[in-house]
Amino acid sequence: MTIEELYSELHGELFAWCCTVCGSSTLAEELVQEGFLKALINSDVVLSLNKYQQKSWLYKTIKNLYLNSLRRRSHEADTDSAPEPSYIPHEYGMVDTEQIINMLPDNERMLFIMRYFQGYTSSELGRIFKLSPGTVRSRLFSARSRLKQILKSERRTP
View 1 (cartoon, helix red, strand yellow):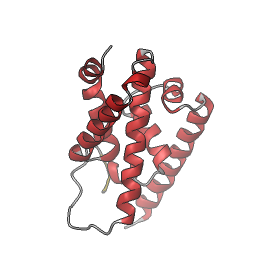
View 2 (cartoon, rainbow, N blue to C red; view 1 turned 120 degrees about the vertical axis):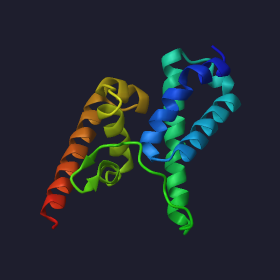
View 3 (cartoon, rainbow, N blue to C red; view 1 turned 90 degrees about the vertical axis):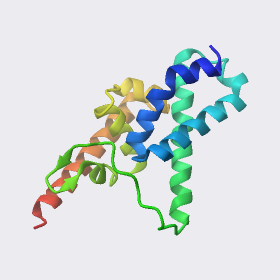
């Protein structure tokens, strides 16, 4: 499989996942494009992997690019641009689902979104992020516990 074939097969899936994680179609497209650029640069490594490993490599690369962009953004005081609307359309009472999920730590948020919004199993997530399925389940439990606390505190707020 070539990088172009990989792009044709996975671009839509990676873009949708990225939109869900970062909440911005513009940023998602940039991250996916940069991920495939890195795949091109490292094509000797990527093409030596099997299909599942290639997919995992791209997810992990794009996740790392996103985390790097968050770190850069936290160091910049750029308040000129407003964030794009959420790609998670559900609401919970007066609090938007995206806002609640964004309160989770990055490592829990990505696992939570991929598990409960995209249907990945703990084993699949473990392979993608190189974690044991038990660690994935533990982080998902922690994320659910945090979300319960957030929702309880939102209910108490008048």
